[in-house]
Amino acid sequence: MLYAVTDIETTGGYASANGITEIAVYIYDGQQIVDSFESLVNPHQPIPRFVQSLTGITDDMVQLAPSFEEIAPRLFELFQGKVFVAHNVNFDYSFVSHQLQQSGYHLNCKKLCTVRYTRKIFPKLASYSLGNLCRHFEIPLYNRHRAAGDAKATVQLLELLRKNDVNNHLHTMIGKQSKEQYLPLHLNKEDIDQLPLTPGVYYFHDAKDKVVYVGKAIQLKKRVTSHFSNNKPTKQKQEFQRNVHRISYQQCGTELMASVLETIEIKRLWPKYNRAVKGYEAQYGLYLFEDGRGYYRLGIDRKHKNVPAVYQFYSRHEGTLELKRLIQEFELCNKLCFIDRSTDRSCEHPQCKGACTGEELPTDYNERVEQAVAQLRKELPSFAIRERSYFNGQDSCILMEDGRFYGMGYVPAGFDVSMKDELRKQLQEYPEYDFVRNIIKRYALDQPEKVIWL
Image 1 (cartoon, rainbow, N blue to C red):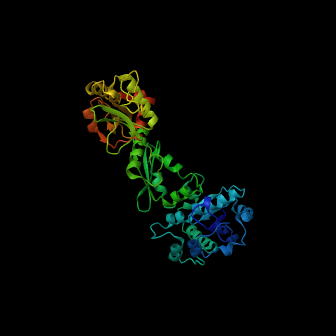
Image 2 (cartoon, rainbow, N blue to C red):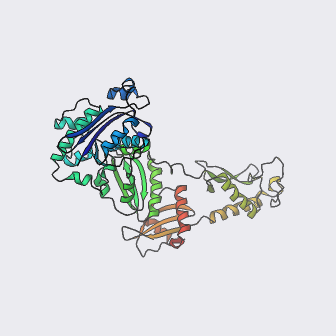
Image 3 (tube, rainbow, N blue to C red):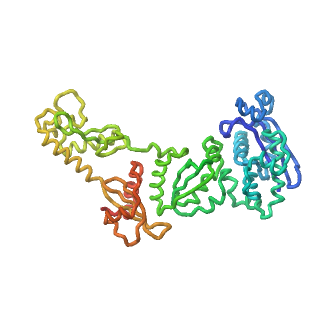
């Protein structure tokens, strides 16, 4: 077996917007280096000053160096049929494969990360950085943060690891079925292996154990693994790979429960890499107030944080249509509902009985407004969704009361969910969000056989 031990220096941390400034590849056959390639590379973009300080590679040094496209044929030839080896392999591989693809070549190699390999052979070391490992194992390391120096040290580290690999971890790590090399550098494979194949919510934690991403799954193990099935060169993907250090999870009885809990947890934790659900809330409300003349007024307005709305809508148009329906059905005044904004004293609409001009008494008009509001609230349903739980032998149950999400949990198979007071005691109460409400209502429409109306 031949290993292409590789190290690169770059202009930045992710491949899609940065370039390679230096590359070194040593072909190692398990005993000795049998071929090699070293070169500075012109990235055709400025090298940031802090990178120049770290590597010692300046813009002047790479000005006359070949572009990656010029050396791509030689590199592609070197990598063919080899195991691509690097210290933190996903970083180097993402750059090299991206640059080769830009040059018209498709790289498809087995990968081996010497950080992960070292953890297998020598667990519980204080640090797995290349510099600290070289000091610990007394491996010579010349020209630190230069491609050739780091790659040569990685060859010697690989040799040391192979000699001490009494359990043949190498064979497992680069085997056809192994996906370990795609995992984030700091995430243990054991964390993935112990995940159940049931619905649930999973949490990715960073180095400080802060949750940076929350997701939901029909099968936890399968979904989490899918996050790392590719190594895209984008900034978000590369940042994500670097920042994931640990995974935790909560099992859920059903996919619906997982969807609800995911939204609640995103709202609670506000993770860095979750975006879509954060801003998905109803933006408008139907508001009721009494004016100076004693008439009740209904109107659509943007949601007010501390003023409860009679009803909520995702758009002004949706709210206006609903208000017009109430006006028609309960003979309300277009002017008093802010539908007719003309300067005329009378709204001149046939259903209006003169409230806008004072011809109809406030008590008579207000009674119909109250009827309209009561009708609207009556249309807000109370129901439970009951399903068999995947993992604990009980039934999952989600409760909606008067159109609002109350909570969810588990009940014994013979429990009568129509007893609302008793049902509440069995469930955990959760915060109520528009997005959660929408998920549950949509599910109730799609799965009416699982809905118990209360």
